[in-house]
Image 1: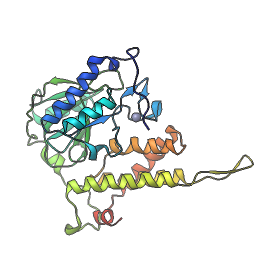
Image 2: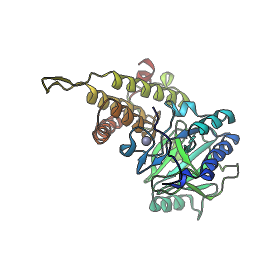
Image 3: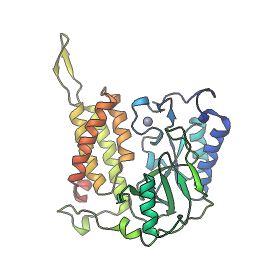
Image 4: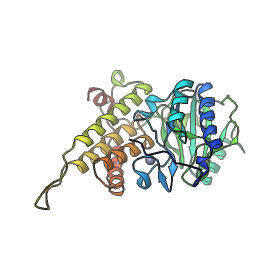
Length: 317
Ligand SMILES: [Zn+2]
C-alpha cells in the first residue's frame, strides 16, 4: 500500500510541476546511458511517503517496488509508467551495471579520500547529497563495501544510490557539482584494492560453493523476501480478559531476520539501505512501533555482521 503522493504546491518544492518533470527526465537520461533506474519514496512532511511516515529511518531513500533492485529498469516505457504513478518519486539507481559510486559521509571523509587519490577534485561526476558526496565511476564488477576508508562506502553490485535531482530529507536536492555527461572514469588504482580486498572468510567456505557476486545479490534479495514473509506469519500477542497471555513471535521473528540478513550483508550480498527500510515497514505492518523495530533490527544486524554465513548455507536454505 502506498500513501497518496503529496498534493498541491503548498508545502515543498517537490510539488512543483517543473520539479516533477525534472525527476522523470533525469530517470530517462540515466536509463538511456545504461544505468538501471527505480522509483524511490520521497521525503514528505518531516517523514517519508512510505507507510512508516515520520518513523521511516530512511526517508526518500528506499524503493516503491517491493523487489526494488530486481525491478530496476532501463526501459523508457516502464520508467514513464512509474513516474506517471508516482510523479514525486526520487530517482534511485542500481549500482553495479554501468555505474559504481564512492559514497562519502562527511567533509573529513572527503578530504581523506582526495588525499588518498592525490587529487584536488575527483575526475568524474560529483554529486552533493544531503550531508555528503557521491563520486561516480564506471562499474567495477565488485560488490558493496562498507568503510573502504573511514566514512567512505563503495556501492557496487547489489547497491543502490539516490541520484539528482531527488529530494533529501534536509529539504535540499541532490545535485551535480561536477556534471554527468554520459561518460564515467574508471576506478582509481589507489581505490580498487580497498574495494576488492578479501573479506573476512567464513570458516567452511570452499571454492566450488562460492557463488558469483551477481548471484550473491540475488541470494540476498531472496533471503530478504523470505524473512519478510516469516515476520508477517509470526503469531500476534494473545489477550484474555484484557491481560496479555502470550507475547507472540513478531519481535523474535524480527531479530532473527535482522541477524540472518546481517550475516549476508557481511558477505556482500545485501546492504543496510536495502534491508532496514523493508524490515521497518513490515514490522510496523505487524503492529510494532518504528522506534522499537529500529532498536531490534540494529541489535540483530550487528550480531549478524559478527557471524557471517558461508555461501553454501545460503544456497541450500
Ligand atoms: Zn520511507
